[in-house]
Image (tube, rainbow, N blue to C red; front, side):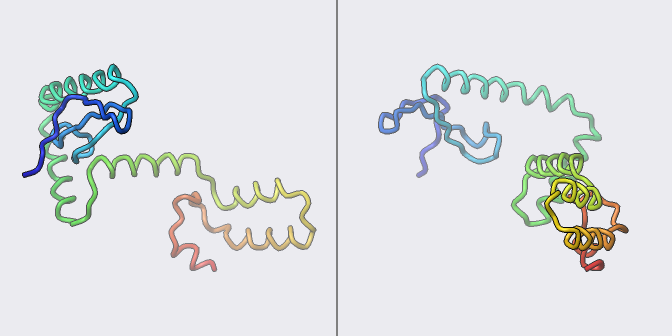
Length: 156
């Protein structure tokens, strides 16, 4: 029979660290976790924070509108039907990361121009070749981070 995680920090003498076993029901990842801390005080503080967050969870859930609950339910249904091992939080974080990438991205024309501006040592022939290549991509107005493979393939 598997041993259940105790939600109380314990000292691990072999490692010289305090260990907090976080059960599935309290884990952010949805899986059992083990977190390590250099001292007892820090381990107990994190345990207390997780306990408090767990207690607040029910009241936070009640604040969601029926529309948000229905939307979340539909998202979980789609995730389960996909058969892929993604979680809602991993998808949300991935999407937000992609939006940050898009916000900082530039067009191919700007990228070529930045490259040419920083390479003053290039010969005129090489510079002219790069400008000619840049002109082949002038029709692509999307930012580099969102250019699809088929768009580049059609130009190449």
